Amino acid sequence: MRRDGKPSYLCQIARKKDGKTVRENRTFRDHKTAKAWLRQREAELDNPKAFKAATQEIRTLGDAIGRYVEEHGGEIGKTKSACLAAIQRHSIAGMACGNVGSEDIVAFARTIHTVTGLAAPGPATINNYLSHLASVFAIAQKAWGYPLDQEAMSDATFVLRKQQTIAKSKQRSRRPTLDELDRLLAYFQERTERAPHSAPMVDIILFAVFSTRRMEEITRIRWADFEPAGKQAARVLVRDMKNPGAKKGNDIWCELPAEAATVIERQPKTGDTIFPYTVDAIGSAFTRACKLLAIEDLHFHDLRHEGVSWLFEAGWNIPHVALVSGHRSWASLQRYAQLRHKDDKFAGWKWRP
Image (cartoon, rainbow, N blue to C red; front, side, top):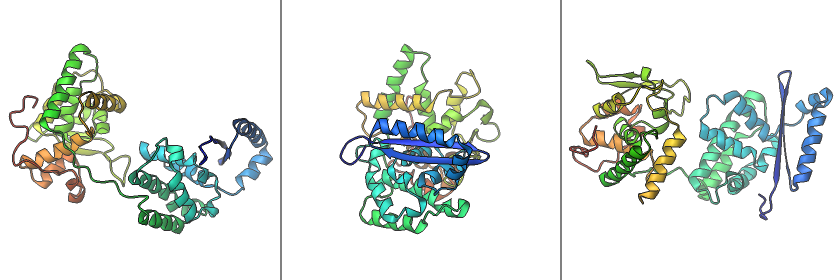
């Protein structure tokens, strides 16, 4: 979508031959012209001489992003991949690497809504896109010789922050009340009675709270990853735990409070995973229930905040809570601790496992 509100059409070509890759991006105002260029350019690249010449052409920012994803795709998360894909649809992706200046990055940040589908992305959202793009700038010159200027990225970030176009996300402090949890669990219990084969959201919510596990982590836990309580407390192997420095292979054993272990032990063993459901299914069910029950501004991830806060309120010390949550520093763990009670919030609660 152009600034005048009229549509634009982005054409992308990627051809690989003899270990070399050609990536080209062109934007057109007319769909017919875009299709014609795409057919013509693909036919040209079928010619070995034209392909060789194309590999020697000036690299674009889109080329740099494509190579970054190609070489690091297994290490980056789903959100970052989606952000980089959106940037490749923006006109800035067609610029030669050596021509991308701070003013172009500033202009990109102000028009990122044209490729995200968001009418008015907030400062934190725009900041995320800039952060992911900065990862490409950080290695393009050093790793591949693509002339992307890191100083231009730093200058643009400075300007955008001064103008409050970008900002770090605000720390959430939302915790569900007992009344909200009662209503959610009653709703899902009734749903399970009507549809026995639906995801057991009652147990998934309880496990999320008492284990402090993220939604993605819950869906990955296998029966082989669970060790029941014996001489030691029960524990579970959390595979690929979220860590800014290591997206893959960050497998951590985390202690399970007795309540979380009880939830696991009552699950039917129907496959390798304990909760054989998708993130989309769980997230959609939770969001839909909150909307139907008029529970405002509650995210599934807030259940992790609830669990960490509950452990502190119940008298657990920092190292012990960290053994459950998997946090490696007090600074990161502290973000999840919104203490509001002086005792065990769930003492005598009818839903407590």
